[in-house]
Amino acid sequence: MSTIFTSFIVLLLIFFAMSIGVIFGRKPIAGSCGGLKTMGEVADCEICGGDPAKCK
Image (cartoon, rainbow, N blue to C red; front, side, top):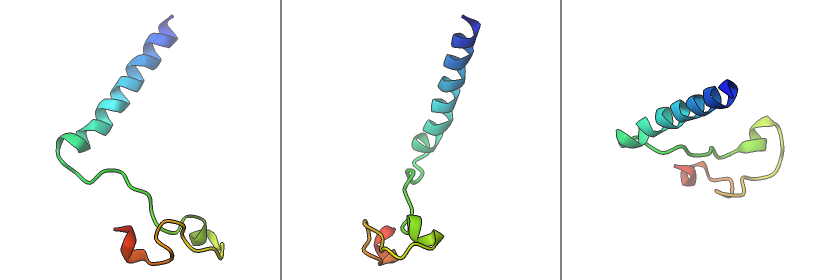
């Protein structure tokens, strides 16, 4: 029972820490353009079509 309670408290703290950015109006979490291409793949980014300016 203590493991469940501890896990619940840890998850609550994580959610609280993530919400601090929302409270202060920071930029939300966003993915990066490139993905597998940055690791040597030859395919273009499905989201921006290879134009990094569209990812901002």
